[in-house]
Image (cartoon, rainbow over all chains, first blue to last red; front, side):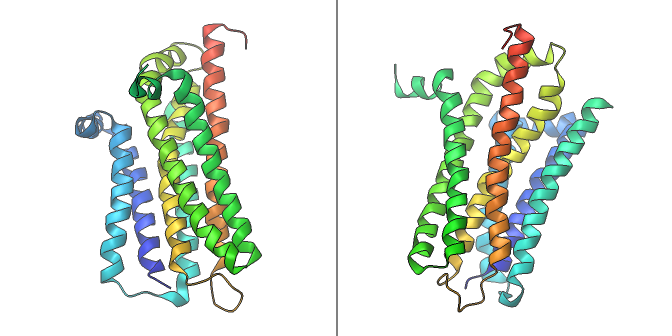
Length: 100
Length: 164
């Protein structure tokens, strides 16, 4: 068994970061324009950031943190929770943002 | 028509991105079944199918991004936002385009998880339930994207007065 802890943390950070920069971009036009300036569109930049952070962090953490195989289930459940939670939070955020 | 022309053609982009996304999501349903069967050959299939699922979902991400940049933002978005159904963009499309980013990440995560275990049998301590949950979330989010896409295209047609 390889480093499930490193994989899970990387996925959690990556998904959390995409959610966070989406929120910041909605409140700060300058920040959103900065994301747009990197690739031509803010969505493309967020997508690349998400995937690149996941891959690079998985490699770095895979070598730098000790595997915790006894708690693999906990880490995978946490990733599932963050993905599902971030999806629900984004929906609620855009709903409130559109209505208020 | 050149290959680039075909790839950026609206008539190809919309069905191609949806097909790649749906087949990619279904691949993780297949993976779930293979893992639940707990057969060694099934585990080998699950590894390849999850890799294929990731590639398809990544392809879907690329094609939908191309569609979003070449057609949606310039043509469809102004139509929807200019009508009475602006919420279809402001809520549905905004949610769709951002949650969509998670799906290839989750698919790669699932593939690497499956690849991390030496074998899928009853005699080792593999956390099955959370891996099933990850596979189910990929399937649910993948098909959720289809549903949200339907709402958005219906809103565009309704705004244009097509009556469909």
